[in-house]
Amino acid sequence: MQPTQPNTPPNTPPNSLVWRIVHFPLVLLVIGIAIFLGTSALSARIRLLFPVQKGTPLAILFALIVAGMFVGTYCLFVRWVERRPVVEFGLRGWAGELGFGVLAGFGLFSVVIGIIAALGGYHIVGTNPPSALYPVITLSIMSGVTEEILLRGLFFRLIERLAGSWIALILSAALFGAAHLGNPHATWVAGLAIALDAGVMLAAFYMVTRRLWAAIGLHAAWNFTQGGIYGVAVSGFDTNGLIRPHIAGSDLLTGGSFGAEASLSAVLVNVAFGIALLVIAHRRGNFVAPSWRRRRFGQGAGLQE
Image (cartoon, rainbow, N blue to C red; front, top):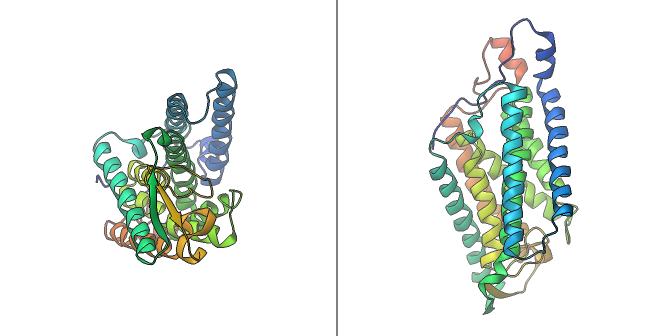
């Protein structure tokens, strides 16, 4: 993993009041949200013009196109609005970070399922053909890329520049959990679990690398492994995986209809991994102090807590 500056600041022209206003973190956040709403509207328009049947290879292609649109939008936002290099999608070492994230996502969820199975909550009853993977591949690409760009690349990063790493971590995790409350079978327990096990872990992964590759890989692989391999509902959405399971037991054990990511085992496993990542980020000096403390000490964005 390639360490970078903890939070790369925008390139604000000296003595320019307009750019100073534009580059204030909350203003950048509003501009970024508006731009990505436009990208989402454009992708929806393209889908209307070129309808694609769900659960087909063409749907996967469309997901890749939308993912590319979001990456391109982020790069343009950083280059044209923040006026700085797009370090979050730097190409040096990208494959290793993405691959490590994929392996972490597969391994973590496999541990979660192993715990649930050992406690009698998960049993294999059959298999499905490989074509069953099409919908979950589409879902994994879309969620892994778009949610990481919006939640970690945009929201977490800009809130961190203003309020520091700890507040950004808390707010981004809470927002991530709340965003899933509208999903099928969602409960406040499921939202809290998502905030704790995914929101903290994914933000911590970003803090370690200061790039988005590893977080995208972990997010996408977690969803794919959950639904595509083990046949478990992904954030409340029913999926068919290579394995057809029988899931029985309390919601605390299995996560219920929302999926195993709302189970106690997922919270414990992912929070432990997230804490380990936070320790690594702290040792690398990748924690950012609040802006008011940085001003007090006359330091840049990299002042460590």
